[in-house]
Length: 162
Image 1 (tube, helix red, strand yellow):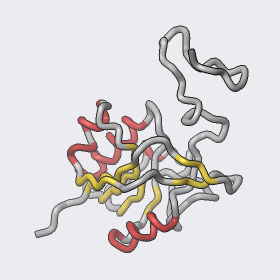
Image 2 (cartoon, rainbow, N blue to C red):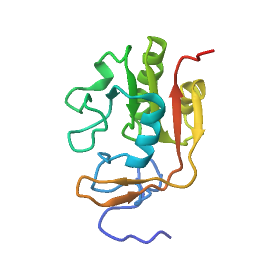
Image 3 (tube, helix red, strand yellow):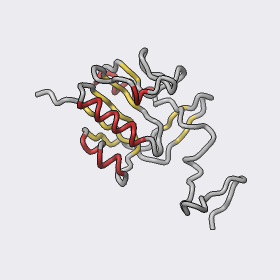
Image 4 (tube, one colour):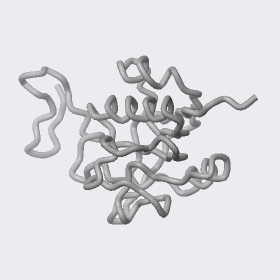
């Protein structure tokens, strides 16, 4: 039997799934990408746009916030960095990244290594997949380190240059 730490039930009686309390918390998904990882990628790609950002965690001068709704914006001529919110919406973000690549963008995605999901097979496998060693530590707006309990990968959608 799972132990409950607070009033929040660990399982959903309708879905029957167990909630991993380490992944579901009150801090939302507005986390900052580790700066050393971003700088390494930026040196290689030269990003022009952060498509999933907020004022406090943006990595580029140009960025789309929640209010801008990047999923409705044109990324086609950009070199994009994307650290999307995790969860069911990840399919929408990976679809947008892939379609933007088809329309001329370079999109570098920081996503979980969720190899059992539809979005992984439909979109991630069409890119260059770079597995990261270890687990990333993100930073919350309050300045707290947030460990992930998922392995992360970089998926690159970029035209091959010969």
